[in-house]
Picture 1 (tube, rainbow, N blue to C red):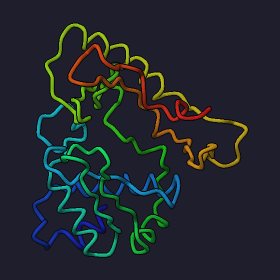
Picture 2: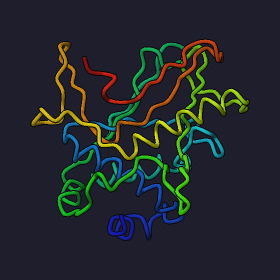
Picture 3: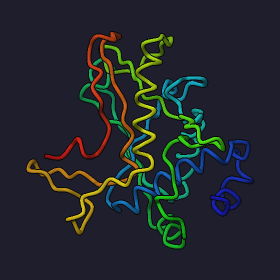
Picture 4: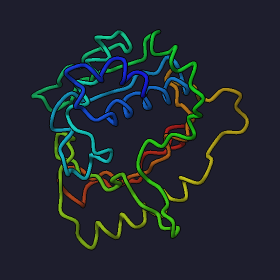
Length: 227
């Protein structure tokens, strides 16, 4: 991160952009590349996905991350396939943009000594007193078009979140695997594959149509996608 920032960002018009935006992009690409070199990373290019103070912006990054991504594309460090909106810009039938590391960035990755298990995809941690500090929102509210909706917490949402905090805390310290497999992907009958990854364990509850009465199933663990 330091090497790429110093060489390509320090003296550029993007020099004022915080280095953590670059770090988020590079670490995410690195973990996915180590998991499976063919994987693409989905990104949102709309400002609404990077609102300051939003409960869903757990990494606390701003829309400036798009400028970082565009700069990395310009430097031929990453590839970009731009997405397209769905019907009425609702996202239905649409596709988000995709990025992936190109050869120049893969050479950096090959030199890295970092184990993917040392990288956390969220800010969940444990403080000095052994208290679980949550960084990612686990109670999600969607509107009719599947867009995330901000809401005010109640006794009920706080109670649901406490249950998920305890469950995700357990998963954070548990290595979930399929011991009989030699390779991490699990091929499904429809031709798709599920990747076994310790970065795919975060569980959340998703409610629909702006209602706490619709949906709410536990969702997110990779094991929920296999037979």
